[in-house]
Length: 113
Length: 114
Image 1 (cartoon, each protein chain N blue to C red):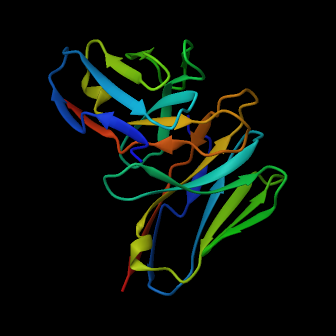
Image 2: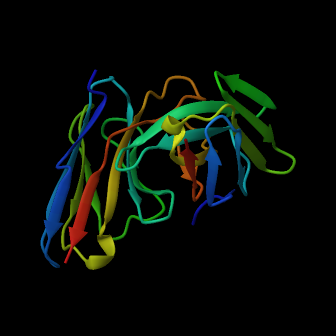
């Protein structure tokens, strides 16, 4: 079963606006990752936040993590048409040497001109 | 840099046919993974190989077999394809050394079973 839920399932905004998507998960984690998937393509890694971190920035991306609530959010500031894609959170809870990701259901972001 | 390469990109099969999906990575990663993605859903893990010579089941292994041919290559086989296996299949690799790193994904194989 999926580790958690993302909301909203779909989000439509205008270029220049900020986009916020949320992710909830169920079990303890080592880290939480966000990936982007353009239509018909594979997943591209955006940002990783460790379980002992609360906030992380990368360019126009800001991720927060609240392990007490088992939730994370991804903020994309000053959105561009090129940001149109599906965004997935994935949690890694494996304690061994191999990563084992469990994905959320995704948020479809549409950025219009 | 090729990264993770999957072949074929598209395939149509009839129920009961067999097929092997190929995946190769050129990043010298130790771990490799096979996922499936159904419409409107995230990825679900089918099988993974933590290192050369080992394979383990993921969340949805039924109907599939895998082979870690060498460090670079990890194949997924459908012995008797069923319509429920219509999906997009993604291969990924992971470096292993040190925790808290991302996986690297191929562009997927779109498989339709009639």
